[in-house]
Image 1: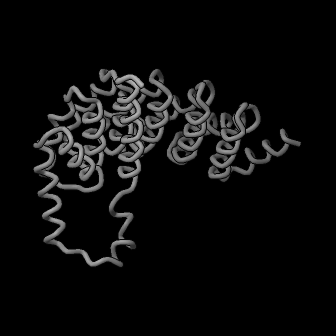
Image 2: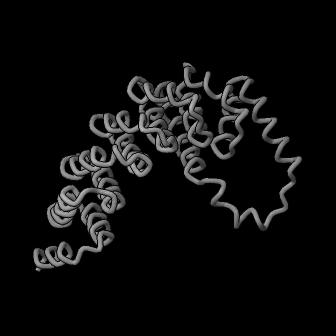
Image 3: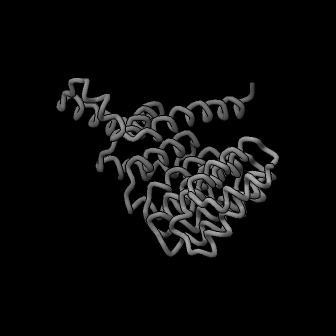
Length: 256
């Protein structure tokens, strides 16, 4: 195995681990934590240790980054930002995920251009996820570009982040919905088409009537015509969320 292959494997494994940690908000663990005795002093010690690790060698930095992919502390920000420019893609990717768990306005101007500029797909995928944790309208144009042109893994996360961001930015919802409609129709990756259907289902209630109608028509078409059964199922689930009897009746008639 070449050094490049080894690095790619390390990136993939670490990304899976960090992504799983980043996707689970500590607030979701309240019921689990309620069954444990939490030692506040010990928790503070762990945070302090992770802050020191961020200033250590490569392996120590990775340990500190993994900690802040799960935990929030404002003191981490000035230590995370320089790692975005690390020559090591593993450190860059980990720092991006940590800044998704620890969002801060100061990080946004550094994160946004990297979604286009970073040469590593794992890092850009992390960026697509992380930007969804920032409520600023500025993230939407960058995510729209990524959804239109980046690799499939980045497009997949960009879809989810666009929906989350547009719910906080009403003047951007139409642009997001239009791009999701396009992705549902033409994206080559079934997972992206499925995610686009899911996103359209979430946005439907917030759209103007004409666009909402186009959305419903596109979901009906995907239910019937998409070559992938998973996409057809997800489009149907999204269509059912619209609670539009006329569209569901059309679907039944087309299937009859």
